[in-house]
View 1 (cartoon, rainbow, N blue to C red):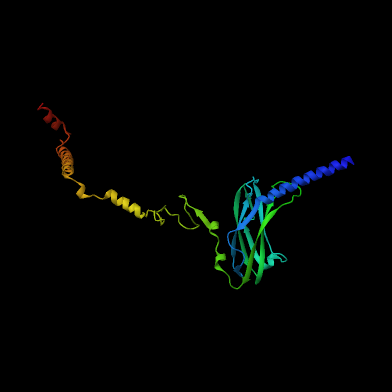
View 2 (view 1 turned 135 degrees about the vertical axis):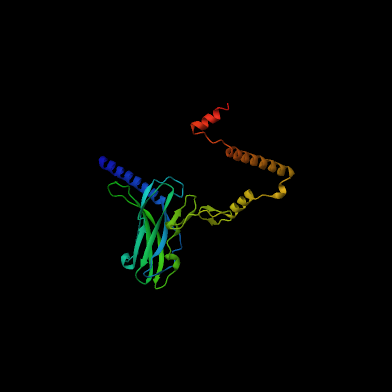
Length: 259
C-alpha cells in the first residue's frame, strides 16, 4: 500500500509539472492579423493574401523559451481542400523569447459561399524530443464570402513579404532601384542626381562675387599673375636658347680652343 501511495504521489507531481509547462507555453503563444478578417470578400479562382503575426512573448513579461511554431488551416465540418487551395509561408518558424515572426497565408477560393477559415499556430516539440507531449497554441479566423467578385486589397502581396533593404537603410520593393540619397524634402535621388540643397551648395562654392573684391585684392591678383607670367616666359626663353650639344670632334675642338 505504501509503495502504491508513493507511485501515485510521484505521478501527480509529474502531471503538475507537465501542466505548469504547458500553461507557460500557452501564455507565450499569441497571434494577431494585420487586416480585418471579419468580412473578407474574395473572388473565386483568384489568390488572396493574409498576414499572420506569431508572438513568443508573455503578457506578464516572463521569459519564454525559444520555440518552434507550426501553422495550419482548417474549416470546421468541411474538407478544406474541397473549398480552397492554400499555402502558408513558412509553415514552421522558430522564434526567440520575446520575439515575433510573420507568416503569409495564401488562399484561392474554389466554390461560392460563406466560410470561416481557422488559422492555428501550435507550439511544436523540440527537434529530437521523444515520447508524447501535449501542445498548446492560438488561433485566428478568416471570415470570408466567396463569389464571382471580390475586394482587390486582398489580391496584393503584403509589402513585408516583397521588401528589399537598401545599403543606406531605405526600404523598397523587390525589383525597385535603391535611391542614392534622401533629400531634405523627403524626395529620393538616383545615381548622380543632386538634391536641391546639393545644387545650392555647389553654386555657393563656385560663385564669385565681384563686389566683395577690393583694390588690395585686385593688386594682389595682378602681382600674382605677373609673377606667373614671368616664370612661364623665363622658362620659354631658357629652353629656347639652350645650346645645341656638340657631337663632332671639330665642333668640340672649335669650342674648347677659346678657353
